[in-house]
Image 1 (spheres, rainbow, N blue to C red):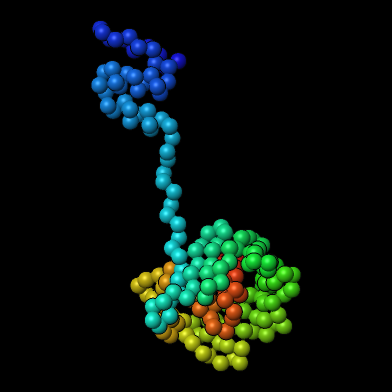
Image 2: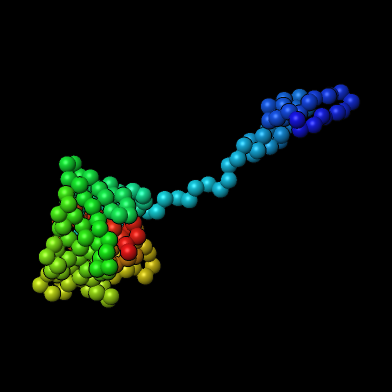
Length: 201
C-alpha cells in the first residue's frame, strides 16, 4: 500500500497504478496518468540499425546488398545468404557453408570441403593461391598479380568508389573491394562480406 490521500471532500486509498488513475479522473489531474505510464518502464529507445551496404553498377542498379547484424544478411547477384557466427555458418538450400578461424585466416568450407581462405586483405582459393588482394592504397590485385582496379573511400561520405562501381554504407575499402569483386562467385562474396562484418579475427 502506497498510503492514504486525504482532503476535505475525498479520501481514497492508493494501492497501485489503477488507483492513481482513479485519482486522476476524480480530481481532474491529467498529469497523473502520465506518471502511471512512466512508472511502467521505458528507458532509452533502441539505437537505429546500421545502414545496409549496397553495391551499385555504372547504371545505378544494386547488384549486391548486405545488412549488418547477427545474423548478417547478404544478397549478391540474386544469391541470398543468412550468415551467423562466429564461427561462420550459413545454409544455402541444401548447401551448408562454414568458416574455420585459425592463425592463418578463416577457411571457408562448402559442405565440409575447403573452397577459399580469407586472411587480412587477401582472398585465397582452396590451393592457397591468391584470388584477390587489396593493397593499403586501395589497389586491387588479381590472381595474375595485376592491378586491375583501385578503391577509394569518399572523404565526405560513407562510401567507396571502385571505377564506375559505387559501394555505399561503408568506408572500408577491403570489404567494398571483396563484395564488388567479379573474380569471386556471388555466394563467396556474400560470405566474405559477412566475415568482415561479424568481426574477422
